[in-house]
Amino acid sequence: MKKFITKMYHLMLVLTLSMLALPSFAQKDKITAEADYVANDDDSKNQAKKKALEKAILKGLAEKYGTYMSQEASVVVDNDNGQSNVKAHHLTNSMVKGENLGIIGQPIYSEFHENGMDVYRVKVTFWARERTSATVDFNAKVLKKGTDDSFEASEFRNGDDMYLSFSTPKKGYVAVYLVEEDYAYCMLPYRSQTDGIYQVDANKRYVFFSAKDEPNGNSSIVDEYAMGTDKDVIENTIWVLFSPNEFSKANDAESNRRIDVGIAGIEGLPRELPYKEFLKWKSGLQAVDKKMTVKPIKITIKK
Image (cartoon, rainbow, N blue to C red; front, top):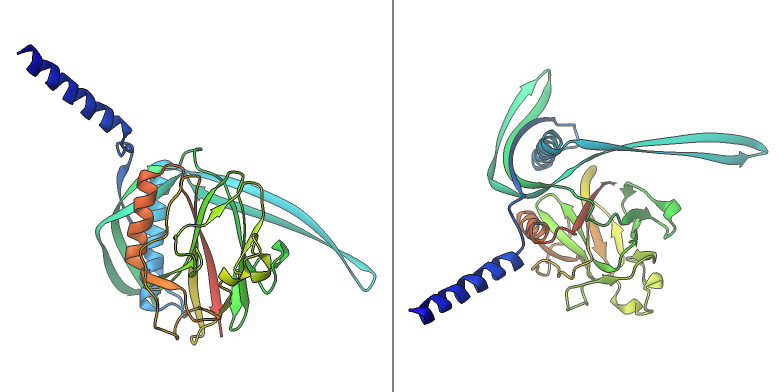
């Protein structure tokens, strides 16, 4: 009898320690939110629904966890034909204090006409958690036609080269995806990197998608991209993911499509996966890694 009790005690102790070693999911919250989005002339139906969904999620996060404001101010003095011009720039940025960990079920959409405008309404339920100071505040800027940070831009035209500058105060791993409508394209790691990870050092500026700026002199691995579209205008989102913990890119596949996509490299498109699969992969990473930081950057592409 004593031997049996000892074995049971040992088994319970092992199970307890194993449970302590697993990632904790107890602090995530279930949120339901609803929002309306008024479509503009450039929005397709899918784009309008996606923007409504993003608006609802941000609304739900803000109502649950609140927001914080950051302000930046700068003064630029330039000289034009001997005349000085002083320009003051003020930037106010509102950030929610929570992050989406994954949608539960299917969002419920409805569409109606109001005051001559198409309105898309969505109700969504999702898992979320409060954003903590454990995440790393990295710096990422989308650049157009040049690799210096002064070339930062959000609007592109057909044929414009696109780069991304990146720096982090902590050593870690980074991935970059471009989302256009129903697909996500893996831009980093590069296509030839078969290990599926990209490691970066702390306090070092990187310029991705520029062969001449490859930090190890291995320019042959770099994919360079030019933006383009056959539509009047399209809105894309560049997602930058960083963590001090190692992670690999999503399970994707080669793309055989060459049109209706806003990026094209020297050898075609990046590897791709459906947008829903991308969200599932991203949410899974965030759920198990509290140090994972994710930043979306909106860009538009015009003919």
